Image 1 (cartoon, one colour):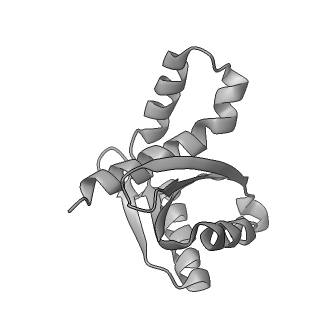
Image 2 (image 1 turned 90 degrees about the horizontal axis):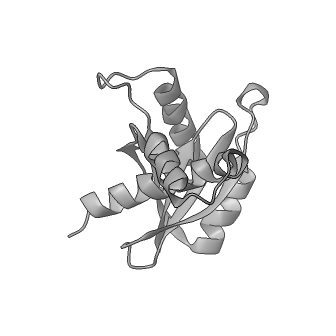
Length: 140
């Protein structure tokens, strides 16, 4: 059984999956969503849960730097509530402050990713960081 990590944005959701042992996170894809039209990509999430035999979901929680919950964090909480309701799986939060910034820096340092390419993969890379941080902090 694997763990799924999600970086929830207003237009996309980055997806990462753990290895079967729960040691490492791998980026899978970015799902396009549309918050305004209430299209949250749940059909694709369901397919990935089934394909990878997911038993737990980790959602990045983008708290403000002062640890308060702002509009984006509230949107992630609502997304997590929907995941729980639809899939009956445990859903946990991982503080994701600055993960997108870290992901962008990492892609820039690689030097081979143009701005357009970075934009396409940034959420997937952030999902990997969210999930890996969770896995690292919850090792036995």
